Each structure stands twice: as C-alpha cells, then as structure tokens.
Amino acid sequence: MNEQKKLYRMIQQVSFVLYETALYLDTHPHCRPALEYFRKYNARLRELTEKYESRFGPLTMYGQSGGCDSWQWVETPWPWEYDCQ
Amino acid sequence: MEHRKDCAGPREMLDDCMLQRLLNDMAEDKGASRSGCGCGNDRSASARQPVRSPEHAERNGPCSSCGHSNQVSSFDSNGCGCREKDSCRSTRNVPQLQGFPLSMIYSPEQVWENLFEPEEALEKGTLFAGLVFPWYPSRCRENRDCGCGRG
Image 1: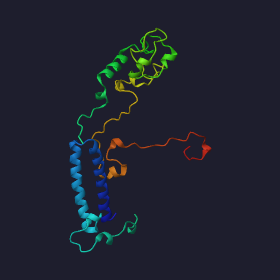
Image 2 (image 1 turned 90 degrees about the horizontal axis):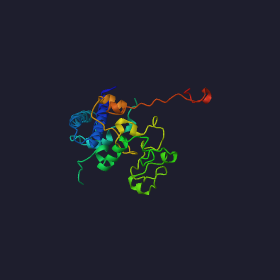
Image 3 (image 1 turned 135 degrees about the horizontal axis):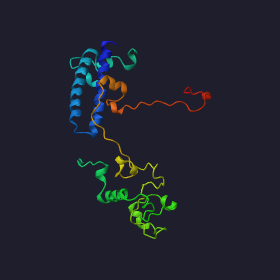
Image 4 (image 1 turned 90 degrees about the vertical axis):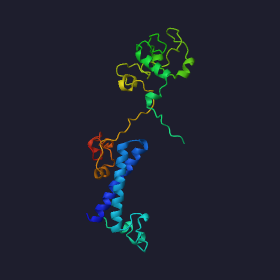
C-alpha cells in the first residue's frame, strides 16, 4: 500500500472511532474517559488530515491550501479517477 | 429546552403503589391467588383470564368460586395467566426481573469498556467488543436435495 493510501486508511479509521465515540457520548454526555478519548483522536484526525492534504490535495472542499492560487478541489482526481486496489 | 437530570431506570419509575402491589403478589402463595381474589380455587377459566390493569379492577365480578370481589389483586400469581407454575417463564419467576413492569423493553446500559484499536474497530464495524454479534447461519434442516448448499 503506498503512502497516500496508508494515510487515507488511517484517516478512515480515526474518523470511524470518532463517530462511534460521538454516538456513545450522545447518551453518556458526562463520561470522562469517552470525552478524553474523543479529544485525543480529534487532535489525531486534524494532524493526519493536514499531513494528507499538504501532500495529496484536499480531502474536502474545505481542505483548499491557503497558499495555492488555483482551485485544487477540481484539479485533484475525482473518485472514479483513482486506481482500484 | 430544559435538560432533564432525573433520568431514572425502570425500577425508579415504579411508583410506590405499583411496587407494593408487585411485592405483595410475589409474597403470596402462588396457588391461592390464581383466581385473582385470593380464594385459592384454581378454576381453569379464571386461571386463563388475561391480566387486568388496576383501573379495570372494579369491572371484575365476584369470584365464581368464593363469591369474593375480585378487587384484592388484579394480577394473577404468575402475571401471565398460565397454569404451568414450574415451567412458566414469566418474568416473575426470574429473580433479576422481579419488580419490573411487564410488557416493556429493557436494555442494559452500555459502558465505556473493551475498545478495539482503530484499525480493528473499522474492520469489525464497531469500536466496542461488546457489540460484536456475529451471525452464523445454521445448517439447512431440509433434506440434502433442497439445493441450498447448506446441508
């Protein structure tokens, strides 16, 4: 698996556990371990997303790099343009 | 919208009257209260009567066996109307479910424990090991010629 796919897979994994934690917190809003877990992985997601987007372009339209002078969102591959693996 | 801080479990939601009635029913001799009036006669008709809610107690006529009014207890002893005392699986016979109102759904509360690492969580489809419920289809019970491949 290349570097881009590895990073993308980690982003998927961290996003997933964040979603699971958010659903748990909806019914357990004062659970401290869950809140701490969410804080930790939320920070991790930001790091991973920044790392990915700086090298491979935006993951969402909000990921447009400040320093770029063209609209990257349409210039990076569309989903059907990626290689299957 | 005001946030409720008084969320209660099922036991806390029982009011004192309801709880006392349930406890009385459990303490009574099961055979004696089958007719609902305490006369002790196990008439098949009365034993199979559906459980009556307290509001309907006044509508019950007197017990055909002893003539007593049916207002003493509007629940029969097992809470299910069946006469099979030993094999009955009414919740009243299950110690941990005694005191819980009938016909309600109860779900054990989830706790923050037994978490997978993110990689395994995504593979398993849940962060919580306690929520993994694999389904194993059973063997086909038809004869081997049914063609389903699970014989």
